[in-house]
Every structure is written in structure tokens, then in C-alpha cells.
View 1 (cartoon, rainbow, N blue to C red):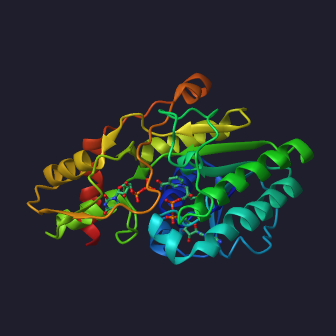
View 2 (view 1 turned 60 degrees about the vertical axis):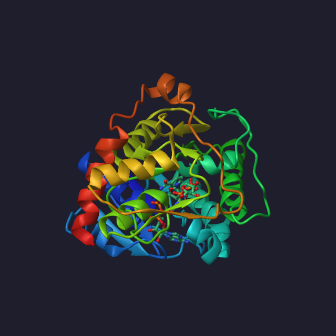
Length: 309
Ligand code: NAD
Ligand code: UDP
């Protein structure tokens, strides 16, 4: 297959490009490097099956030749980005998704959207099944991301219904692992960087809020299973084991052997209280199950961070 990956120089995108190449697919990576880095794909550029186009997909996208699949991952994704570049996020979720759907339609390619558990907002149903419509504040600080992704899902389904484009939508739940940005402000990268540099771990609020953290290799396996399936509609892909932020902080201190203290900071506005995927659909459709537990994944992630700090 010849696969276009938008956001391919980002955290998840670079792992996806590597996995596609490893199974023999050709990859055209499109990225404007707003939050990604060329270093993330440095080991791929010598692969003859890999090509890189530096471009903002919120503007018209041109790719020469045949394309079998378009995988749209381009979007800044950390809460820090929500306040720093909110308009870019809204544009890539709306205009960028429109442009890449247009590319998929023109090429007769499959379209794959990287959506998010954020479409559920601060959920009132727990764990979250795909049938839950969510609880999102459209005008809050996270609204720029949540609503952009909700629009992206809507236009993806519209292209399927009106133009017959073959579409996949993955709802991704908190992924961590090698090549996270050390300064992206997300909880796993923050805690590991703080622990390794002897600085206080910053717990926002009382630390009782929960997340379910999925190791990157498991997540990418889920992406490929969904891409190869024939299911149209959103599918949750994430780890079902739920941890409080407080528990995560102590686990990070343990696996890094750090004696950093804990420092409490205010809880950000609209921070979801709990989050855990209902995996019934992914299990039924393609028997997907995460394999890496949080401790093992954190050890691997911390090892990688040690090499770059
Ligand atoms: P990331 O910031 O590392 O990667 C996003 C990539 O997209 C970057 O390389 C960035 O430069 C690129 N990009 C952004 N806007 C662009 C534009 N207009 N044109 C071209 N390239 C652009 O983030 P990530 O964690 O790898 O996230 C990848 C995707 O997965 C995003 O769509 C995100 O919303 C989704 N997601 C991620 C998580 C997670 O836990 N990491 C959770 C839910 C959803
Ligand atoms: N968080 C924290 N300390 C940090 C960074 C984040 O306590 O240094 C909390 C944050 O308030 C949220 C959780 O960790 O409750 C996950 O935050 P992250 O930004 O990783 O992702 P998201 O909120 O989008 O799930």
C-alpha cells in the first residue's frame, strides 16, 4: 500500500510511519513541524519507501501518484498547545481534515482519522463506549481541540455518506512512550522529566482525577488493525487500566528511583475527572488488547528520556 500520513513527524505519527514501513508499505509523510520534529523520522529518511513533504495540511494538499490510504494524524494534541496555538488546532481539525478527505476521495483511498477520547469531554458515562455522545464545553480552553475533533468526525462520516469514501475513526486515549516531547506539558512527560532532573513533580488539583495510559506500541498495533478492518465508525483504542494522577506520580518516582518531592498546583479549567475506554468494540472487531502494563511502559519511556535529557 502507498500511505499518506499527515503529522508523521510527531510522536504517534513517527511510530506509525515506522510500523507501516516495517510491514512493507510505502509512506508519504506530510508535516509542517509545528509540534513535530525531523529527528523523529531521522532513521526513516534513508528508507527508499519513505518520503517527507513539509507542508501545512490546513492549506490545499497535493500528492502525486496513486494513494491507497490517507491517515490524518496532524494536530497539536497537548493541553499546553490548546492555549498557545488554539486557532491552528481548529484549522487543522476542520480545514486540514477537509483537505485530506478531498485527497482520499480524489485518489479513491481509504481515510483514517486520529480522533480522541476528548470528544467525550468530562464524561458522565464511565467507562466510555463509542455510543456515548460526550459532555464537552465548546467555549472552554479545551473546546478548541474537542470541537475540532468532533467536527473532524462529523465531516469524515459526511464524506462516507455523501461520497462513499471508505473511512476509519480511532478514538485515542492518553498514549505515552518514546519520542514524546519533553516540554509538551502532558502528565507522563512532565513527571518523567521532573523525576529525572530532580525537580518537584507537579500534581494538578488533588491528584484524584484518573486517566488510562496506553503504551505507544500497543496503540499503533490498534491503528493498523483498525485500518485493515472493514469497520466504518469510531472505535476506542486505549488501555483499560485506570490510574489516578497521584498513583502515576508515585509509580514514576519508583521506576526512575527519584526522590523528587511532590508539588501541588491548581487544576486546569475543564480538566476531565475520569477517563477509561470501553474496549468491547475493538475486542469484538479485531481482538485488540493492549499488552504492555504501565510499569513496563514507564520503564521503557524513562530509559528513552534519559538518552535525550
Ligand atoms: P504530536 O504533536 O506529537 O504530533 C502531531 C504532528 O502533526 C506533529 O508532527 C505536528 O508538527 C503535525 N501537525 C500539526 N498541525 C499540522 C498541520 N497543520 N499540517 C501539517 N502537520 C501538522 O501529537 P501526537 O500525540 O503524536 O498526536 C497525533 C494525533 O493523535 C493527533 O491528531 C492527536 O489529536 C491524536 N491523539 C493523540 C493522543 C495522545 O495521547 N498522544 C491522544 C488522543 C489523540
Ligand atoms: N497533570 C498533572 N501534572 C502535570 C501535567 C498534567 O497533574 O504536570 C494532570 C492533568 O491536570 C490531567 C492529567 O494529568 O488531569 C492528564 O493530563 P495530560 O495533559 O497528560 O492529558 P489530558 O488532560 O489531555 O488527558
